[in-house]
Length: 70
Image (cartoon, rainbow, N blue to C red; front, top):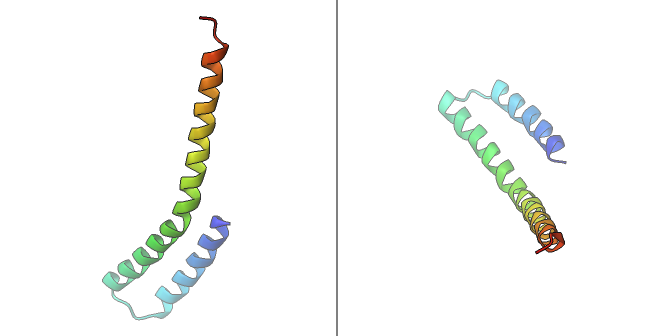
């Protein structure tokens, strides 16, 4: 899903930058805004995945600790 959005954004940004008479500062600001927006959009999903991974790892470590003889 994210790759598809990034490809679409890349095409749009490329077309806008080629066609527009922007200075390099304006282009940098524009591209920075697009990147920032993409990161902010993807962040909640990445945080959820990280939480799931850490929770699974913690649960697994609890099982391994219980399985070991004392």
